[in-house]
Image 1 (cartoon, rainbow, N blue to C red):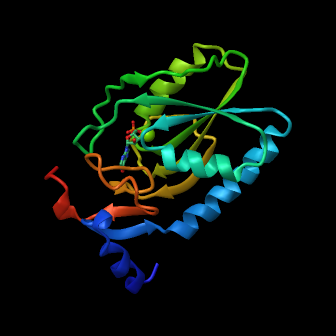
Image 2 (tube, helix red, strand yellow):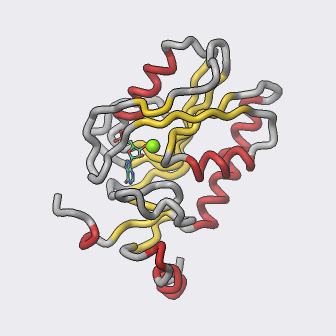
Length: 193
Ligand code: IMP
Ligand code: MG
């Protein structure tokens, strides 16, 4: 992404407070197409159930499922995240559970980002208790973090530095989800740590 393009983008009202673009729209879409091809080959003639984790994974989920060419089903779960903060609380609450039964199904959890890994670990425990035939995880982003919990992630879109990011589904206090790229916020827009 050139400096000129970034300046144009950040003039948009939805981009107020963005310091820089970390993963631009084209790079995101190319990587998602590659992930989809891997998933097509992996599931073959089976019909996986994609479980999107609301709200953050909504953009990734919709782009990924449209890039996949095999039949599939979808469902969504919602879990509590950071609220107004940028640090995980470690406490995970299920705000919306699945509509579908997953017993005997091949399940693919679609996550926006793995940071501490706490949310995903909680979710995977919850899902495993329902006896799916298989659980796989695809996360668009994974932070390089030494102290993150060990967690199952089978496919990663991009490994990123341990910075707070927004856009492409990810929010800060509810904003920025509709940016078509992943970006880093201006420090002065975040509360003091
Ligand atoms: P974890 O439990 O620390 O792995 O974080 C899980 C959830 O927190 C993710 O699924 C996101 O919804 C949210 N999150 C983590 N890091 C970020 C970030 O950098 N920006 C926005 N949301 C984030
Ligand atoms: Mg999430």
